[in-house]
Image 1: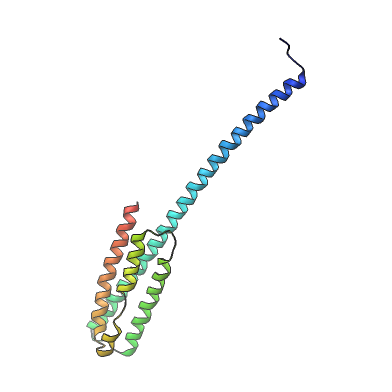
Image 2: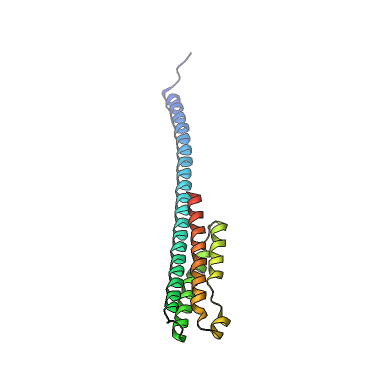
Length: 162
């Protein structure tokens, strides 16, 4: 058995080393790709959680505004056109924020539905206000109660993911 020339040996060892490096690179790229996928999934979950937290905060604001205007009316105030306009503007602003959150990609359907219900449930009945400004207190109290339910449902949805 002949050992061959040095060039054949060096060429063979080089080919073997190249194959080893190629396998290492392939496994390394697969590992890096899996890690990037895990990081991207973690970031997606974190951003959805932040959106849910923001929705919970906005619903708590709606609930607080409803309770505040309800108390104002209970104490004999808040029946002027200015108070009604302020209440509508405050609700419209918060509802607009909810609408923006609802369009966030990747939200679970249950959360999208709860946000949609909150947007719907936080509307003032304009015809009642036109006939009786004192209905503002009653409507705002109802809004506060409905927002509490919506907020609790989103909190429950948040906990079910954890």
